[in-house]
Length: 288
Image (cartoon, rainbow, N blue to C red; front, side, top):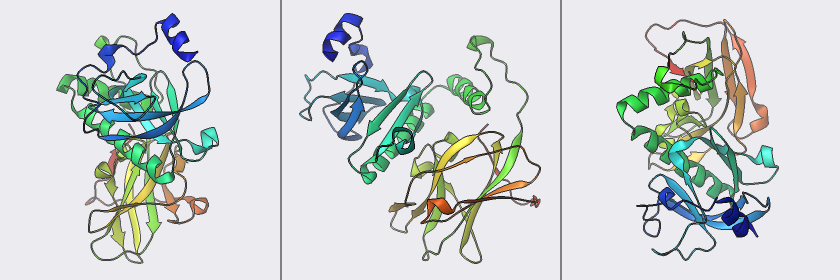
C-alpha cells in the first residue's frame, strides 16, 4: 500500500538522490533500524546504509549494485542527530532533523543507537566541511541565527547578520577519577560540542579532587543535549551511562555551573556562582 501511495504522489526516491553512491560496497555504517513510514505511520524494520553523505535504506540486507533504495536522506542537509527516548517513549530511539522535518529511528540496542548517532554526526560534520568557503560562511551565519532563535532570512543573497546576541558563561563539571593517560571530554547535539562525534568533542581540564571541567560562552535560551565521554589511552571511547543530559541557559551576570554525576543522570546540579576572570584562559565561544 505504501509503495502505491509513493507512486501516486510521485514521492518514490529520486535516482539523483543516490546517484554515484556506491551503497553496495564498504559502507561507513550499515545495519537494521526501525523507521516510521512516510505515509502509513507504522514502524517498519529496514536495512540502512550510510555512505558518502547519504543515508539510504532497503527492505532487506542483500544490497547489490542493482538494488534500488526505498529512500535516501542527504546527511549534509541535516542539523542535528540525538537521542529521542523521551520523545517517543521507546528505548534506543533517536532522531535526525533537517530544517523541514524530524525523522525518528529505533536501534536494536543502546550501543547501536550510540554508534549510529556517532556515525551520522561525523558525516554531518564532514559534509559541512566539504562546502566552499563562501558556502561555509553563509552556513555558519545561518547556524548562528538558528541557535539564537532569530528568524532565518528568506533572501540569503542579501543576508545581513545582526549584532551578536547575549551569551552567558557556562561551566560543565564532573568529578570522576581515572588513570594516567585517560581524558574526559564533552560532546553533544550541537556543532559547538561536536555533533555527537567524539573526535570533535571538547576536552575537559583536570583539577585537584579529580574534578574535570570546561568553560563555554553560550547563547542565552539555548537548549542542548550533551554527555561526557572518557577517552582511554588506547583510544577507546566510553560514554557516560544513562540518557542524554539536557540543559537550557538563561540570562545571568553570574556563571552557570552544570555539575554532573557520571553514573546518575538524575543527580545533575545547576547553580550560579560569581564569574572569576582568568585572562590567561580564553573560553570557547559556543552556540552562537
